[in-house]
Length: 204
Image (cartoon, rainbow, N blue to C red; front, top):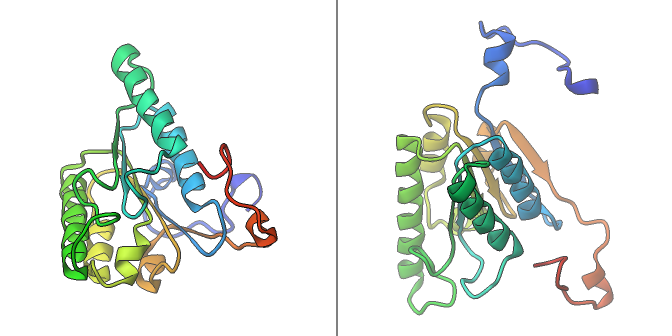
């Protein structure tokens, strides 16, 4: 696909402009590093275009100080103060639908995950955001806490022009099938293989 030119033009009755403006469902999966990092890079582009950005983290601990969170919260404040970029909402573990570092059974954790998904589905129906990051969302799907068929249906039928990017290993095939953009991160080499731990500015 040189210079962004598609190899074939689909016979879908749409103009080039209409086709170019279709909403994207992206999935970043695979065992390699960089799935969330790439998603937040896309969110940064969206913010720069003035899109309302909603981030929903499903597994990472509330106590983990994620660098992207601090940056996006600052961008949200910048928008509020100057009008630059778009609005930003960041929801993470410990703020509504967390199971990490919380006591309870698997049933309790599944119920919390379902609560989070219902909130996202509601926002999609109301077109609350223009760009969504569902970070580590593949895990509650893999564990059976959230129904994959329902997720595929809601995402496939979402109204308007809402872009969604989902991250996490082992994305279910049904989700990959409905996605417009699928990237699999494959590890070739990692410093942790040589006994080196994650470091500031690289992992967080």
